[in-house]
Length: 214
Image (cartoon, rainbow, N blue to C red; front, side, top):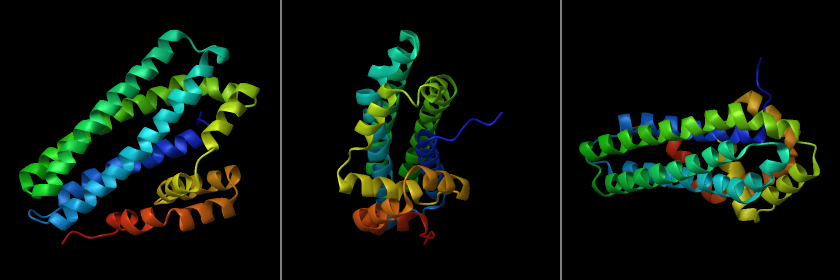
């Protein structure tokens, strides 16, 4: 049985997409190409920012209401520990990507790729765990006042933050995910936020994924 689509899964898909294409790009980058190395470091920095923001939102607004949904302390503790592990892995990859951006050497590209793969593994374990064990609780209580209140808090973002988020989320989004997003958030809202307030992402990050190796 196919699991129902959620905004959480849309975000997870965007995270997986970026980690996958960053791994591929590091395979293809030419030694000494500092411009390309800098582009990839910038794209990773954006991914780290979005994933960190997502998890901080869960830490602040989702985890506190989980006991009211019947989620046990062991699962909540596991979610918290996995967030800490991801933060550590992202920090290590940030250091590797920064080193690569400075040198653009083949050795540092390989080290950065290995770090991205490791982070991908750490992140994937959490995403799967959250989707399989935690989401069923959230879906069962999605009409509850507690969940609606948490969602409202999560959606209160400055236009610049929301714009960057939607520009990133929709960059390379599949048709079925786009159709779900259309049902969840009015298309004009997404369009205005992504195009107007997501200009910096569209200018500085989105082209990274369409640039061919030089």
